[in-house]
Image 1 (cartoon, rainbow, N blue to C red):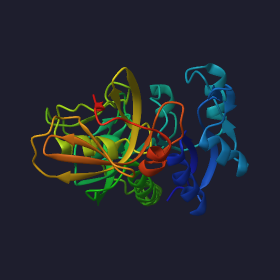
Image 2: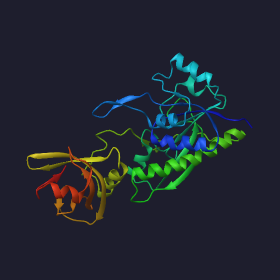
Image 3: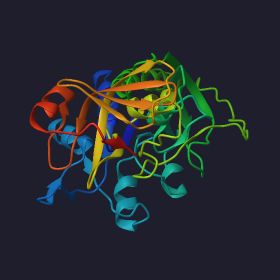
Image 4: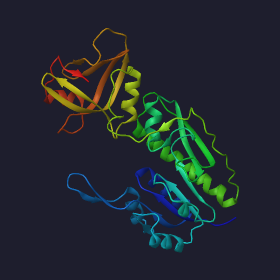
Length: 315
């Protein structure tokens, strides 16, 4: 049994929960690698990654390389004498980095691999209407999310779950998976399974403005899944046209009423407190949304302060 000396690599909040669990289980973390600081928002203030903030609070040795092949960074990484690297939501590593530690480098991915390899596995599982997902630990190789699987854990996805709540549940499940993986590696009992390639494997494409836009030629269920799969971030959106005015509107929460009808698709139905949009197979009741220049609000708050005509339509 070999005592682990771990370098942890990660950037967002999802990774923080995993790092916290590693520390609480009394594993030695000799270094943390995270993204370089960068300006963000209107004021372009320097923003630290969630992992940097946590690592600084815990007084962990922190590295923020801009180039993972830089010799100065590689020398510093070697000097930490880690025998294992753990990666959670970071970036693709060059071979000379992932091959460096004696016990290898493993990654935690928020899907049941080989499905949903890529940048946004939590979102796409919901967008595609999956009823289950999970997490997988695997040893990194030279491609993205293709390495030999160590273990996986599965959970159901309820019909009304958002990406935000699934993110938090998978972070907890991921903490369990990483903890169990560390025990197996420490005991020399990490038996792996090679991932099988299939043309039916589903992909977790990077999210962008185009694939976050609501397409009203799709069914109500598909649109409902898109909204909850992108809530609260980056959010689904559509254009609302009201005569000569058009708004690009973010939609965060909605209910789907399955009710066949003959209304024009995209037509808005508005009362003092409710906003519904006709979709194929029913109506979307919009619960919270954001118009340009306004904060996110529930529908009743929005309608209390602005007027949308009965001729308005979602495009």
